[in-house]
Image 1 (tube, rainbow, N blue to C red):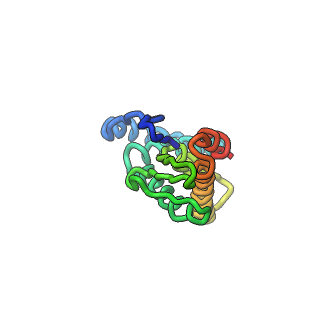
Image 2 (image 1 turned 135 degrees about the vertical axis):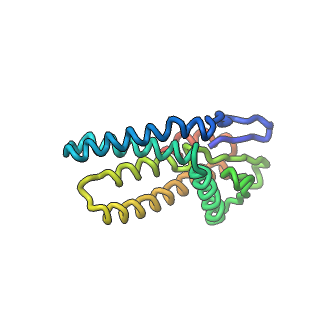
Image 3 (image 1 turned 90 degrees about the horizontal axis):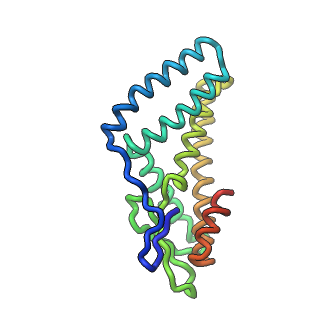
Length: 193
């Protein structure tokens, strides 16, 4: 979560990303090399290297694709912001979607705080990393049949998204009720739990 405080200072702006064509130039050969190595270990019956390379490599490639080639990260950020916004009223917190295309929330603190905090849902808070890691682990787990893997994957991804929304609600609640001074504590301590 990044914040822009009333003083107009921007904390933690995202770094620029490589262009899509540059990413595509190395991404396609990397996917081919990864797929060939995973297939080799599968055919050889070397299950541990198959699982580790398949799960970890698949997760890394999924994150790169979602960030640099497809609008996947943005879609997850926006969905998270909308979900937090839709549920925050249950905690008595008024939020506004500041820029729903960028997955940002404007959190209005309780009236005696007289302050506002703009929270931006970045890659760490979007849940993309957790979703990609979980996807890799489930898809390449060799002991489950393929049909069962897909059912487990769908349930796990849905529950992970919900857990991430709850995590974001904890951060939003801490900022709304504790003020901007609680942002760092909420993000580093409560947001990691």
